Length: 296
Length: 306
Image (cartoon, helix red, strand yellow):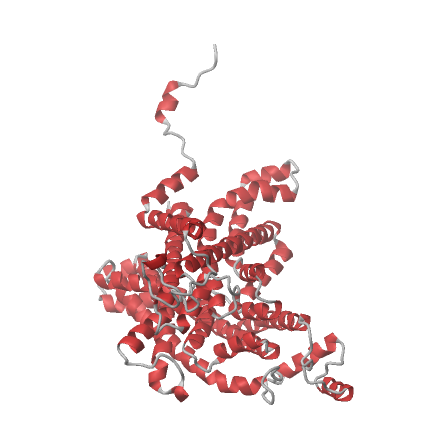
């Protein structure tokens, strides 16, 4: 006869719930965060698909319709700029660039921050102190000026902008991950892994890092709006991607110069950027409330 | 306290030295020298010029010369503006930035703390909700969108204030830039102040003070305020750094002749020495501000031992 679990135990015990399932439930209950997520997905989709559906190309000049306001004529729903380029398509293309920079720079800074923090926290001692000193130093630097300097010297290449932004966005992550690693390090299962002779790098990457995931997800979602904002600041100052390619910051920069005569040029990209940042902030708050063990 | 202060000052040196060194080396990687221009200069003149600016020496000696000049407060010569040293340019721009930055920070801290206290004491009232909505807007709408909004309303529609320019610091030209910077910082200070005061007010020693029958004003002023201010002070350092970003945007947007405008112009003119000088100067100011915040923090928080 096969062994069977005593009935009473299965009936008394609540159904098993993973912490991730818990977090998802908490997130779904947060209406502002869910709506923000939906809006962000929508913006990303429209930016991705929209330019293909439009009859205009982002660098095409419509000679008969230069510098006109929003109109149904020829589908210039957002109007055109002084070169007759359709602003709707340019806003969508700009959104592609801004969001791509946001995703790439976040990815780079998350990888760097997690690796840095996990190693510092796990190894400890003098190496930890040294690595955290570097983080402290980077914290005290007015990063925008260094970014301006790097772009000045190295040129206004797309990937360079991504790297410049990432270089100053990973320190929060490193600090938090280090703190969390320190607390994980003292847990029994790490001691057990040590005792059976698992090498340090395997302990870090297969035992410590997975347990850091919650806090990494929180800080990733907090990094996104900051990174998008930095890109648009650089572009607004005239140091972002170059014409005819564009981003929301570049469009706002261009629109700001002709604000009095053609106000639509600044308000459409400005609204797109603001809406995205607003949603990204709410999303970050929602993630934190859902995943932070302290709020349980 | 003196030992602690000294230690904190020494701790800032690596930061400064790292920034200076990295930027100096980056500058050196740029192709071309300062005297490569279309106008042909004779070899003898070029050699003289290079000797004058120590460009004929090996890199490490040039670097030491640069450090020595920095110690004497000399930021070097400008690459583009002939006859101007970086010091001259800074001397003209610094007062503008200090006025705008200082005034807006003062307003932001005072108003932020007062509004934060008000909202915390009337939690969930209309005051609280209005302030939180305001902080949300100030916190997530970028400065270069708030700036155009302010200009549209107050300059283009109402015609109360000029839309940009400096005009030797006449007050009408100062109002909008200061408002813009103050709004952004105020939203951070107000949010932190509200949050920390609410937390302090729910702690047991406040309950004890209430049970003793102390009036609310005494509780807030004598007992709750000091611990509640600690997070506010700790946020001032990062805030100062992020205000530098906002200040650069503000000065560019309102065409103010300050440091931010200078560095953006320098960057688009590829005026390397000017950009390097400004980076060093602003880093120095930022490090100094962080140091002051740290010391203020140590005075306020009895848990910090020195």
